[in-house]
Length: 84
Image (cartoon, rainbow, N blue to C red; front, side, top):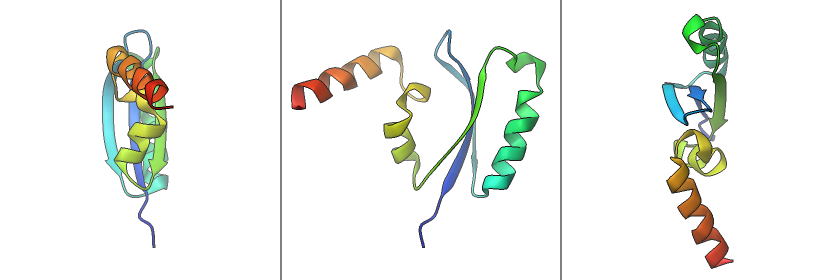
């Protein structure tokens, strides 16, 4: 059986800053936490998301903008283009 992890993230797109990163093994609990964080006034101008996958490494590959700086994303893109 495949284990699924769930990350709740609060991300400020304007600055690329990851404000909150919480790890859950239960999707329902992760969603409840997301809804709680969406009601926090401090996070009004942010993205509050739940990402789910088989591993955190998979999430880094599929949703890198939440985890990498702009410079790191640009380098990864250059590397991918060069390898193609």
